[in-house]
Length: 169
Image 1: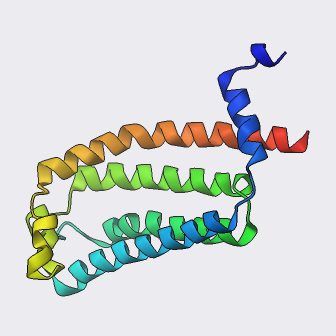
Image 2 (image 1 turned 45 degrees about the horizontal axis):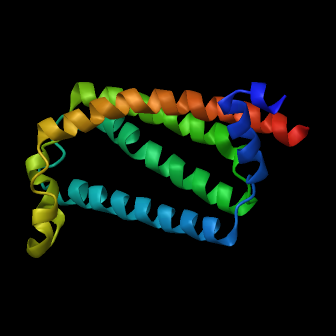
């Protein structure tokens, strides 16, 4: 019977066995949330300092779409850390991916950024880390993300269903 099961069913069974978060997983989630907060701080610094990174096209809609996905990610990470289980919060992960996809499509179309100013909020000795990122490079990364995120969302949704089925049996 095991040989006839699909790879995905076997993968879901393995995921069900490791659904609980270890202490190191929880610590990693906290570190991830802190990293997201630092990235948010970086962009808030751009916005409040009027560095030129956000152009005049960056309005309220763009701001909500830009900041909502990482904030939802922090909420999902905190909830996962508090609950101590992965699968129960996968639907929130899927919702975050859908929101990220919508946000990416919108900001890709509007493109309210000028990446020549991306490094402006960093101290002078660190600016070289980000100065090489151009508008074209950022658009390329965004286009790639618009392909990857829907695939990841479908995968995560299917994994949720299959792992849930395994956990119930």
